[in-house]
Image 1 (cartoon, helix red, strand yellow):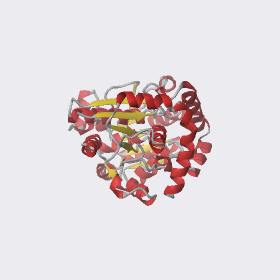
Image 2 (spheres, rainbow, N blue to C red; image 1 turned 120 degrees about the vertical axis):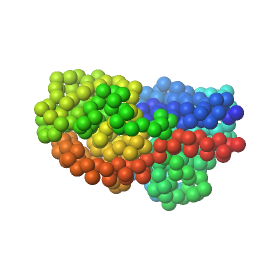
Image 3 (tube, rainbow, N blue to C red; image 1 turned 180 degrees about the vertical axis):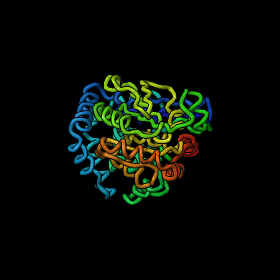
Image 4 (cartoon, rainbow, N blue to C red; image 1 turned 90 degrees about the vertical axis):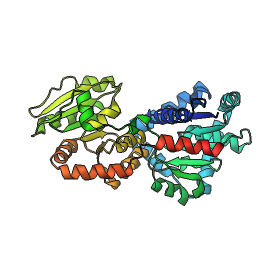
Length: 377
């Protein structure tokens, strides 16, 4: 029986989703394993939590260009510079780490897994100080790796793709510590499903293309614009499914819209069949979070990426576009013609699907879980 602590931070839903997927895979290996998924900011005090949350939100959502400038300026190539910069940042956390250390000591895990840079910074700093001696594993939840993921105290890295691992190796991380497993996604994606089966199950048409828009993280006015124009411009029978998730502003923005002459509109809020819908779709339109990209690629579905956050999401979008599994568009006005052109080019869609199949890692959660258990055995 192993005791595994998985630490994440609450900035974006992807880190928690990856943590839960990995936890499920660890438990699937042996139900006796004790796996705890924990938000690091529950143990470092409300002051630091509110400060970091406020800064992240303001930079990424209100001042994306400033966020991009910061993100890229702190992405240094040299291993020594990256680790020195990260340790200087870690030192700022020192007054807040007592509660985290006490929590770890109470749980006494056999290993700690971090799915985001903030918990990595905290745990690696505690190890660097000699206050913590536990194996430390890192799951990089984006397709390209920023210098903030680098710490000499890490025993193993799990990355999205061999190219991601190459970047780490180029920056001084020993190749033996790098495992190109993919980003952990729900075990559900390993279950065989066909588009026909999923369309029948959810009342979707069998005789026309289906386009799905996962717009919960996108500015509502931009989503409304692209949906409205797609409904107006479609010239062949098709279905457009919008998924607003918990975004009530988006749901309100889409409420007045009705089906077009050729394209039917189906509006959804929170759904429990995201994977089914991805399988059923000919094209998925979304942002470029590491988790949603991984889930879509794992199902071999072509992507059209819009509105990536400067920094990590732009890098994810570049990765998908460069692989041929998707298209990146920055102007919402370009989304309708690009999407409709893809629907009229089945050979190109099929090629994008084949590229997605090459890039997808549906068994990532299982592979990471087994490797971790082997490393601590």
